[in-house]
Image (cartoon, rainbow, N blue to C red; front, side, top):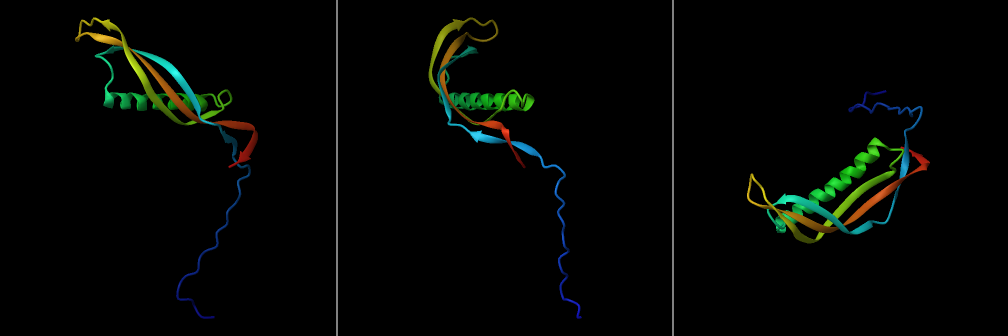
Length: 131
């Protein structure tokens, strides 16, 4: 036998886990559209303008998504839902009241009407799959 010019690979052995982690299957549902949702905001200087509308839509979408996913993590047996996307669209806004402020100039109460599309999945805990 002659020595090789390059070292050979060491064999590796993978030992399977004694019990694989069981994860519930995520069954994706059709996106859910909710229309004519109303939110009332106090203390604003007036109607939201273009850049503010986009920021409000993004923050509102993120808040809803985080709410459902946090709830699912805290109560996995009671909330078998995983929200993967939320899209919020402002459809109208109206100043419904003017407020007097002692600190700043007058502010308004703004009523916002919006729609949301929520993309989500439900965990099928009856048909668990190893992961």
